[in-house]
Image (cartoon, rainbow, N blue to C red; front, side, top):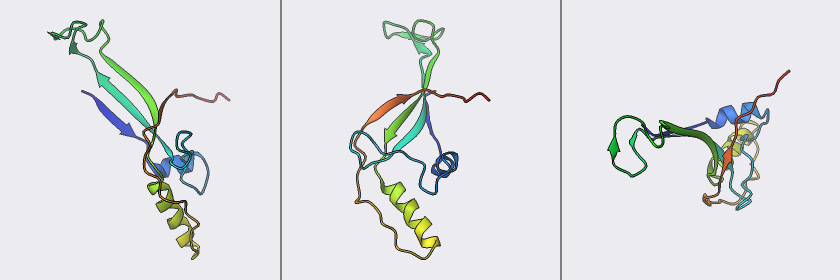
Length: 114
């Protein structure tokens, strides 16, 4: 089974300890925002020649899994910024609308040790 799981925008903002959206700007279009996704691709049932095989996936690898950052435009970021400013009763200085540009990059999970 293949699937994609996204991190919630609210969690990103809290993790980055910012009042913003927690999403870095896209280096591809410089206006969109990057969002992380965990992607899992199932390889069982396939063999290197492409015929059905129920035993072992591609060279006995059952699945591929990893994190990727994808440009999602800035619609969600602008909406979140408007919500924050509305809480203060002010008008938000939002960026012009930017659609997703297709930029993506692999990410490696890390952990800070004390």
